[in-house]
Length: 246
Image (cartoon, rainbow, N blue to C red; front, side, top):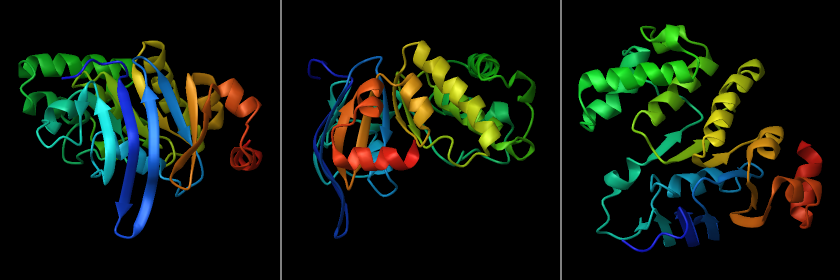
């Protein structure tokens, strides 16, 4: 294991699906405790970038180093690295036949992280944390979209990750449910969780991010603090995008 300077270090990351090159050489450094929001037009490679950070998508070339582990090294135990990375998707991926509590307990029990009683106690605490203590015995079908997404966040937190990845966690939700999910992410940011958040919510990115990365056409076009990127974008591509969404 190498000395860790960055929590996540991405160098020359390329990803192709057949002849289609989606990521065209990304260099990104993310420090421990940093909240990075990734914005940009649809099809710019944001979700693919996120999925490469825990190797859900194979990496065509370049390196992705997480906590000192090079994910492109064939000898690295990916399952071990992934246990420290929580990921929340656009669609909630909850098991419909299980209760909310069972969904959250599943990974810690499977990974043998303490006893079943420990997993249950942790799950109940997490439900309280996301404001759903009264829904432990409900099935996913009985929940609103915002509630399902908060359960999905609790489930990701159940393995006690030190990095959280959010892929458009609010884009499948009705507008009135977006706020409740963003509040949970805000709370995590305030606690110092390292986070990479792909989002369409510009107001949220402006408020929560330490740094904003603007991607287009498979490249990082511009990055900076929210004040820099939203207040004084330097690149014409960034200016054009922000003029349409702000």
